[in-house]
Image 1 (spheres, rainbow, N blue to C red):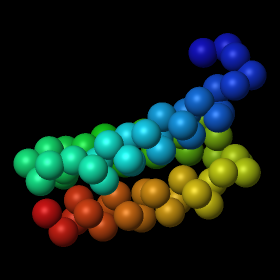
Image 2 (cartoon, one colour; image 1 turned 30 degrees about the horizontal axis):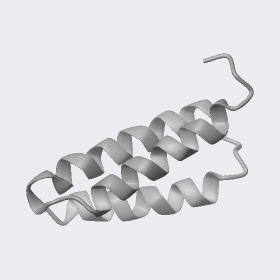
Image 3 (cartoon, rainbow, N blue to C red; image 1 turned 90 degrees about the horizontal axis):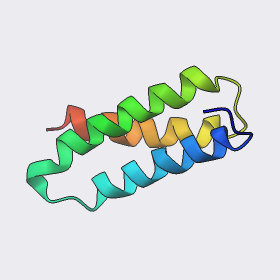
Image 4 (cartoon, rainbow, N blue to C red; image 1 turned 90 degrees about the vertical axis):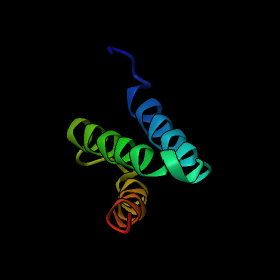
Length: 70
């Protein structure tokens, strides 16, 4: 938790969760997109002024739309 790489690691986790949800079978897709949303909020809470905020916001928008459509 006290590494200088915390921000890129959290972003990497967010992207990995997104890829997992994107490639999931239909039965697990909604649950995994909800996990993406949780990871997004964790990232934004820790790094609200991140230079990667736009990328994280885009991932959130897709995940939120997918959860809302299920």
